[in-house]
Image 1: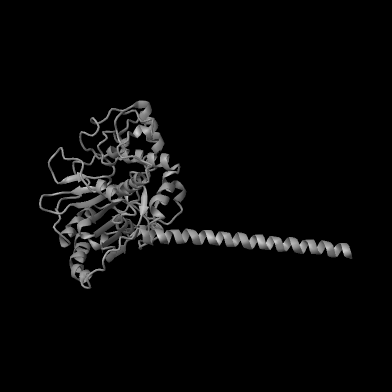
Image 2 (image 1 turned 120 degrees about the horizontal axis):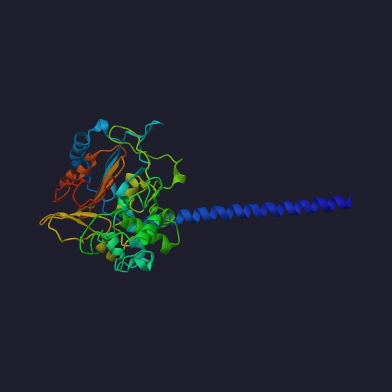
Length: 407
């Protein structure tokens, strides 16, 4: 009997120790979750530019012009997607309608991630500029410092950001070196450039030519300096700090997530192509509200330094006269006597959209559609309701666009 009592006592002590270890582990895990949550909340507050409150009648005074654009220009019945207008970070008008996924009858709401095509370039640029602020990237450093496989001399990070590198577009690589039946990736693009050394379109930094390859290489540079895959690096640099809960860089593993699919203007589902795995230039899925969070943070000197904002929001290409220009990951419309209009359009398969940041008036306008329509590029019509902005077409079919299937 004594031996049994002794064994029973040992089991009781062992069980107690296990319970204590389990409780400690659970408490530790809870504390880690709370710490991460607290850090995110601190970051959101840290990056808040503290805009002034809106005048009491501001939203009401602008509602008529906004609704007129939405109902008349977009053709309400045929629009699928999201539309948002905000002032000082506050939403004054938003609409979500249509099908995100016609097969499952999933309709758009404020939390539906949609592919924003080349609007992705603005976010990639912001990630790069944050790494410049962290002294991990230098804007005027030869990109071979980060990617020694690049065969061209004298191309800097800045030239990738402002599309002045002259590097050829990967979508135009000959079939012999990039077979259509073999998916292209960022790393394969780099290998092709190294092995085949396709000729530059022009001597670097002599002119502007919009080209997705620039941003595919920037994504590789981000991976190199952060030692993270680009989707993860973007989470840490942008999405998590700004609480962009419905934003991610597309990977095949995310196919099971609820997100908007892409359709042409007739409602036919768009096929995946060999170019759909390349990121940095595209493949950002996000929402209008998440883009608004990003826009608001760009006014904060804690999120981007004053120096980086000055570099981003200025034109770099003045060889030819005209209103169109490009900063670092942002398009610009400039006209003498008028306020610069900053924006980026997106077009990939059936996904079309526009993000506009009217910085002099702290107004943000976002329109995203997963059913192909060029009507979204008319959003700058609304700019005249908020200030003295140049009115010029934002359609990606303009001459400076160098891509065939997307923008």
